[in-house]
Structure formats: C-alpha cells, structure tokens
Image (cartoon, rainbow, N blue to C red; front, side):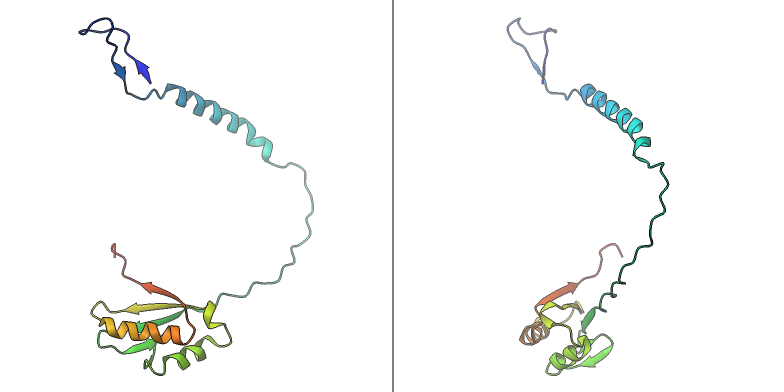
Length: 144
C-alpha cells in the first residue's frame, strides 16, 4: 500500500492513501523467473545415449462397457437398447454385467424430461434393491 505524500487540497497533516496495486515488483520477479527457467531448461535434457530395454508390461484390461438405463416419457424402461420392465430389470442388469460386483458397478440413467417422478423412483428403488448403489444421472448439455 502506498501513501500520497503531497498534492493539491487538504492540509499538511491529512495524507490520503493510494489503493492502487503496484505491479512493478511482481513483473520484475516474473521476468527474473522467466530468465532462470530459460537458462535451466536446456540443462534438463539428457545428452548421454543409453540403450533401454523394452518395457514388458501386462496389457491392462479394457474398462467394462457402461450400463445405460433409459426411461421414456411413457414410463417404458430400456437397458441399453433392450426393453425391460421394472420387475425384470434386476435380473436383466445382473445378466448384462456378468460376474462383476453390482455394488461397484456404476449405472447411468437417462430419463425423458416428461417422465413421471414415480416411474423414475421405481427404477431407482429397483436398482437399490438389487445392490446397484452407484448411479449417475445423465442430462442434456446446455450448449448443445
């Protein structure tokens, strides 16, 4: 913070404060850091050639295909592209994920904006009853 030492108006005991930020020291420090990094960057490259052995790593398994549940405005439920009912949804989901643990499986729900809240809650309750606790809701992006 700086102080105004003299100026028009006011008496000699009244000193106004200048609330503007002095950026000159900040710019000076940034320029010095820029120069240091420009000098140090070439030193970080390695000029000694070494024949490295090939990397032997087990290929990582591809992540499982995500499971999407779609709820139409009429209340019809789909797992992926396959139609199902709320009563059969638990068995169909277990069949679609295979041997994976349902408590660790994330289920993505897409619902029409005109879907009844009750129909949506039936799907959510069925998921929880069958051990699917990780649920993600998909919405439309505002920019598209």
